[in-house]
Length: 97
View (tube, rainbow, N blue to C red):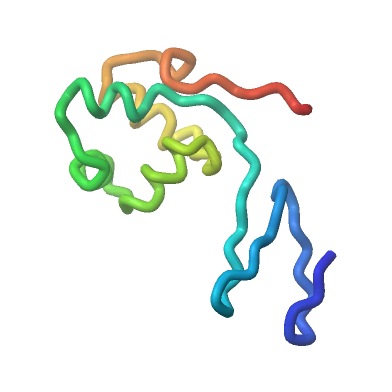
């Protein structure tokens, strides 16, 4: 637990907190490996293009590509269908350390 400005903040699944210029930047633990960036590049798509096509925001694509955002099952299936792949062909879950 961490107390910031009299607010209690519990941190789950986070490795480090960095204080930069008055902002708190949270570095999240990588949850899985993904081939999303490679598949997107093979089709010549930007993160924004893919986000629009999937009906989500670009930030979500960024976090999925980093492996720090756990997409819903519905979104994982949508991504797999978009690239005509199986979910397991795109995402590889990392074992707990």
